Length: 501
Image (cartoon, rainbow, N blue to C red; front, side, top):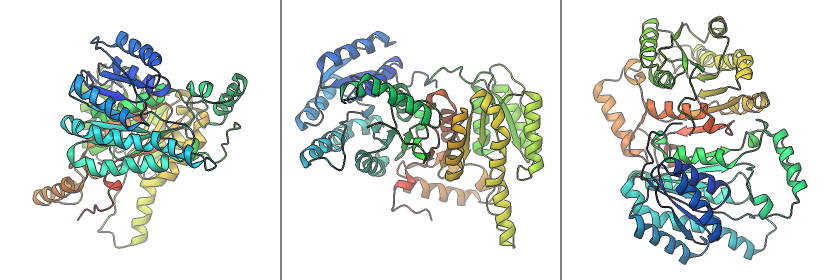
């Protein structure tokens, strides 16, 4: 993704940044213009990474190398005092430092060490960083795990901080990496090189997307969560595990990208004649994609298609389709049209949906109508799109809470090179409230005030918030993410006392 100098002169602290995920993260932030702080317990390793960062910094920023063991309270204080002294500013905190372990058979002493490094130090760093991040409206990204004791504490800490700190402008999110190819396997285990090689062969064969994770996969997601592109995302823990946790048969037998990425790609966005779908289609067109605009209102489809063509850098002609995708024959017509026109498909965004028709007196008819559009049509589109997406190694993104459909498709389609994820929006400002629910201006104002007052981020979501998340999930920056439901709700679902009137 192209962050357009967003990180220029931002101050970014990444703990545990002298190797692996932390190293890749500081290097990526440095390449984007940030002032980075490299930390770790090994001063020599810190120096090597700091030199790399300075060499690739477009602004030739001096990189600070601070030796610190974050499990020690005095080291955390010294680290934060140094950041304040040299910068007087902090925009992004990435809590990446961690210690392996957390098994049920460990001694209390081992668990105490594990706790101090993986949870207590994170909380202390967040508390010390809070005043600085409040001034900059900054972001915290916590690196958790998919197994062991770490996610039990870290994931809940992420949610609680997001809920409490959202009102002061600080977003807090977490990442849960799967099996990542880092030096830790050589440095911190008793495994021989042959055993490590066999382990990665098992991962490559048994993960749904048929490859292991790399530090760069995690770094790109960290940058996304720290950027303005995710400004309505907080309290979320995103699994980056190649679909592993959604694949029950998997057992391991071991003890932001070019801004030209979408050039010429064919992107189908259903329900793209208004709201989230419209904004998504326009954004993909702006990024150089050939978009397919669909909807039931021919006039609205024409208007959105014209927007897309006018903003397209290559002036690509926009493919238009008018029809109700709740009907099988319309799904078939749409897919046949795409094959005939392009014989290519790279991204499917299943955005079309139908709300409850409150004028319908037959509850079963209302249920059947919802089922046809909100579930059956999505499954049919995915099946029809599969052959084209298999060729392009494409992506499906469902705008829905069809969690199990997304997970099952991710498991089944992963070995074919197709990733499947969902976005789950909260209260988003779209024309639906006015156009379809008949709200007047006064009712709309009252509703959005209630949302702003009660959402942790103190604002409702915009269609741009969702569209940017969809583009991220469709991009190479998320190439190790599949089977995930990404909440875009301003922290609402992680705030248990919130209830919209």
